[in-house]
Length: 105
Image (cartoon, rainbow, N blue to C red; front, top):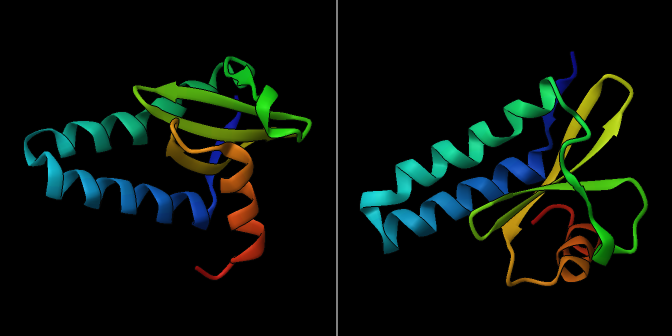
């Protein structure tokens, strides 16, 4: 059984998403938060269930799609590391670049 580990960056991105949704669509913000938080639970049993991320140009990245959101992770031994969470309209290369260029943001 794999362990799911959220990066601090992914946690921060999730907080920003939930905060945004709470302002825009308060009636569904909690539901979306629950869906985004619980979606990676399946990785404990099926770590390779996510699709390979073809558009990132980075090997070994996989993703879960939750509505319009992408949860990108990598498998390291017995752990699935959640790296980033973002809206699918954003370009993953830009999201990854932002993370590398501005690691403290």
